[in-house]
Length: 405
Image (cartoon, rainbow, N blue to C red):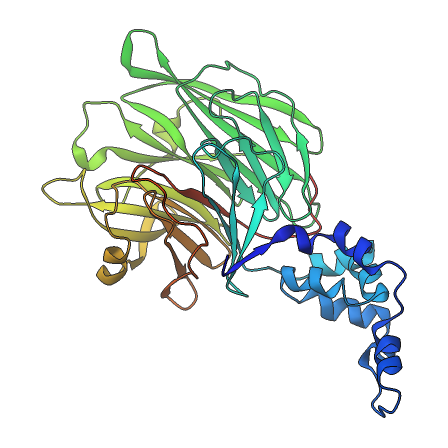
């Protein structure tokens, strides 16, 4: 299919089989053209300098470089190369789009090479689960059984199943977030569970559970009953603070259907969520999507109509500064129309400087660059809509080699 490349062909394990006992690239070139008088760069550069150069390549190009010759394959497979690669501040985040409502298969979009790669995630069973990502790690949780929790690196395909989180298995809503440390390569996972009090729609039991990869243990840091609000499935960790959206269960004006809670993971107070850390949203929202962009909280939200706040009229992007929202951009109308029929809810995620926005009803993918304040469409995803009710969703992640679950 045009625009599609199988990611399997770029895996490091496959490269080592392809290389076999081949001589170096320079020797093969000399053998094919003995009269050539030029000197191969491969012979001039020492390993450490070549490692640094290769570390700055796009991730897909690194895998291709490993198939050039035996020497390059050994370099990109070495521990020292992984260390050099870890010093590169960022690879542009990819966007993974599920293309089936029943199977955990889809395509990942590389914004640097503008290509889609067919990828099967190693530990995601179904596309309707809860997924969060940080740096090179992706955490997934089964919607039907929240005890099924896995962490994986989609690029290296290494994965690990985690211990079952504490608390009740049955809850109406659960929000998942992960935060990875680039220096220590450790990570923290949070789950915000929301369970309705029996026979009382206005009161909801909220609990926050935290996992530390270094201790490999869960702790329950907060349990509280909220009146008039409940948590949902939207959360993110930024600079040591857990943020999650809450939703009105009645008794509030339409402009206040959404709210934001901030929870400092270092202090971990045990009560008083609404009094201590409630942040109002900037306007009436049809939905909100939270993301960590360079340790700043960014929200992409559907803007409701003035007279019908439950109907979307546009999409805005805000960054939280203190407890105030600062508007960064609004989607131009031509791009909003480009999605065709746009639902009141949609998929959106981002990291580094890129934000991806996708309609559930079509595989079209829009990208917003926070640095350049520029909107653009991705290359067309190599999938077609097979039936009217087919849904598409996805998430973004940073392609990294050094992170392991």
